[in-house]
Image (cartoon, rainbow, N blue to C red; front, side):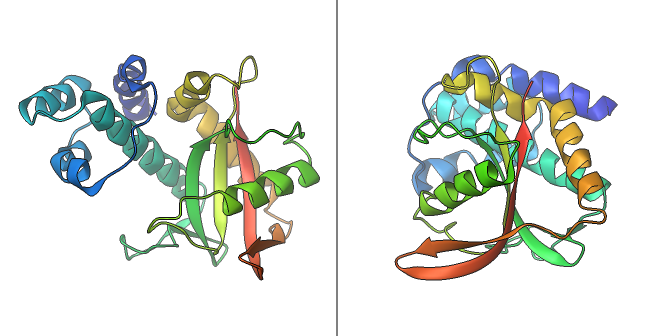
Length: 211
């Protein structure tokens, strides 16, 4: 946990720079691929300046990469198996033999329903919305997916408050452990999602990350 605490402190330094996310593009992705090799805020900031690339774009990628990788490591800590093909489009982990894509995300601002995410019906409604409104780019798929949804209990309509929770690794671990404890004997949640008039049966669930 000591290493995660250190990483959390480094990532928290990026939060004031994040603001509104810029649209992802291949050009800036290529210029910022150094984010994969560093867990030090000042080093990443320096390289962004040297490469004359948007600091906000760089730090968004860096923050999202390290928080997502840490979430995967926490799943593995509690029994998930990592997919060997690190470039697989729709599988990150296997849980009790079932393949899942892991998506660490913030509570969507455009989701205008007032549902209780501690109920099955509330979670399933948001899951269907997330599948319907997912990116239409290369990461789009209608396969099994686990969503870690960061939702600030005080002001979830302010995106930066939700974004901060991505690096609260203590809260991520608490939610993941609770998920594994609950499904130790239960069957995983399965539901139908619709895309372009076609129905897909998927295993999917939401783990709420809140302070």
